[in-house]
Image (cartoon, rainbow, N blue to C red; front, side, top):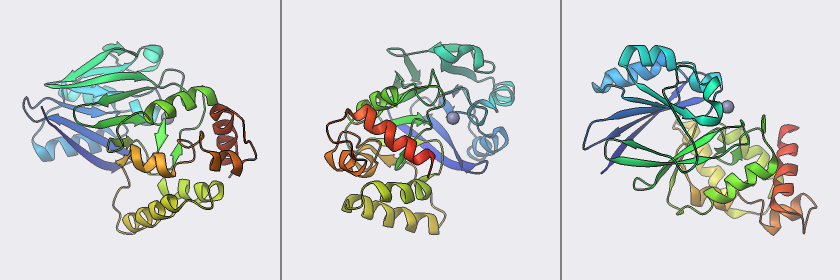
Length: 255
Ligand SMILES: [Zn+2]
């Protein structure tokens, strides 16, 4: 089994993703921010679209479901806990469930916090995880429908993945997240190096997505809420990682 993954920008700062099982030719997109752009990317490769994999219900993730389903006959897969809010959903999935793109299996992880039913798709054999708006390069999603404890549970679980795992986040927020991350850990050389590399990419209009679990583990203040340096930065030594993440998130919201 092997999986081709295409990343392309759309809308103002979203990323679209196309996945194709090389052996079977089965194709999926993760979320549907922009039906026209996704169609264009499909047509440019002479592909079809067998599945739409939704991570959560926000319109910049599901807005193209109807048009793409109608055009390609794709099956819409989405989070069970948001079933009523996912337009044109066919199959509702949740923790412990599985999805297979041709020969390429994915685990479904419940990662609520940004929204109440947000899920992630983990293709272990391909060393790739699609995290929607839960984890961002140097950041995490806003807590619209969940708690800091839920977000920390997701971060701690992502932290258990192999460091080389490719992380596909749904937005290009990296340089803005970097400006904030620098205010938390002022003495983290991994963060400094990360920012230099991200700035160089953005200067040439290159996506900073995918990132890797290892890079986020070393530099992302939300993935590092269990580290003494982050606790110290927010004057919360001895507090739980959930509470520390909550404080870092509160500061980011006000940044
Ligand atoms: Zn969202």
